[in-house]
Length: 136
Image 1 (cartoon, rainbow, N blue to C red):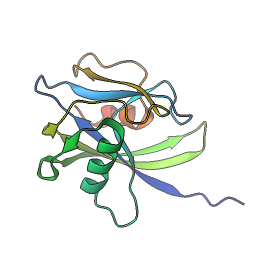
Image 2 (image 1 turned 180 degrees about the vertical axis):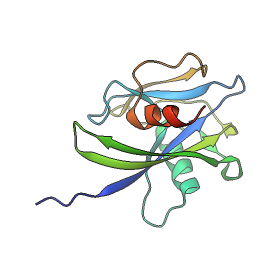
Image 3 (image 1 turned 90 degrees about the vertical axis):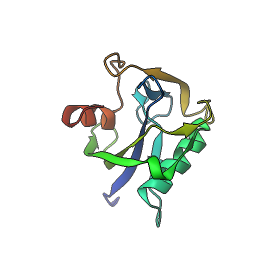
Image 4 (image 1 turned 60 degrees about the vertical axis):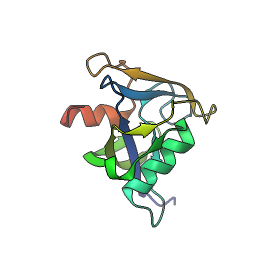
């Protein structure tokens, strides 16, 4: 029997000078067709900040400043279709270097900046759950 485990995910809400948030259109099987911020799995021994910096660079090419990262919320996310269970720690960043580019084309179709009041309808479950409890 497969062991049921809860994984830890990190999402990074990155804001530009217009106070727009960066979201990517997912292509992977997990959350395909939904919009989400950069992020990924917390690895053993990593801090939330280390994961946010690593995953953002791997996915977008953006460089984040550790001193400018803050936890802004936590969600409990159960994906019924896959049976996956995550605790997602959302981080906020507004200081970064570079321009977002597609670094993992097999996982993300595009990156786009959205005004807080003009988010797309199809949001990745952790982001949807975050918005039900917190504000951007």
